[in-house]
Length: 454
Image (cartoon, rainbow, N blue to C red; front, side):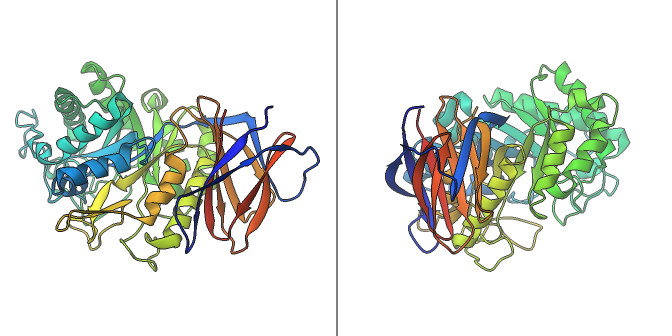
């Protein structure tokens, strides 16, 4: 192979974030053995579909409150492939969720024929935000949608909140509700890549929520939702199940795919990260169902600017938490990563029916028109700006568990590695590809992206 340079971007605890360093050069070094990180570009795993966040009504409302100049800054920060996060795979919600301004649905009560169906509520904030992103990204912007709950009158508890389940009598109506939603968005020039059956399918929440068993999800997807989508000309819309924490992802997939025919209708498996790392659960799920992509569809980190929160967002703690999750998830077959709110205000909202706010990569202050890039923004950029859609994860090995490593080969052959130094000690290492190595300095508590050009 030709000797090549390694371009380096690095963030260090207590130091500068996302700093470009001087490139280092590969040298022929066939005998190197100690303090080595190996890349194996011929060993390939899953294909990467993209990165993104959620067009919640909260995010869209905050976006609408900013000046034209600030909105341009936000769009560039989120979607620009060279100077932003290069987001290209995003989520939105089917009527209200906890990060809506208030509860709402698209139909009047008891309208089983959906004659009153209207997405007019979304026209105020959500649609303009999505269209601004479409203008920036074009057809490369993939979008999927998730419901937090069917309307209250379709549920056994008569409540859009507090769990409950979809009544059997409304399975077909609820499937048509999805179809109408897709039809109305298509009229707005917004197509959908996919749908999830239910956000957090085991969660009883004080906000919008609904509970499904694994079998119920599979039956709804296979017997109702997929046929309804196909009949309406949406056979290309992909259906995902679970959309909840990793700790149960294996058994939920196992039990859903045990329903006859479900594998034919369910394209992929969505998961969240709120109950621990559980990387092995992803690995087992992939090994059991290697043709079903695994997508992280929600990944929020705690309250804003709270260094001591259990899911801290501010400072190095949040950056290290995020990077550790991303590396572990990617190394166990995650194919896409979609965060929660694209942006929120400094109070973590607005939100309703819940006792706490949330963090986001971008905070805004509409009163001052300020756009704030949080530390986790830069942690995300270490991955999303460099790992392109269509990249494949490649083989790696490291001399120490202190260094968490993942690596990819982009469609043009460029290689990208991301290294998290979990320890306090500076590590002087060599990046090796076959018989050549390049010297690297990885400060204690640092996150480093390494780009090896073609």
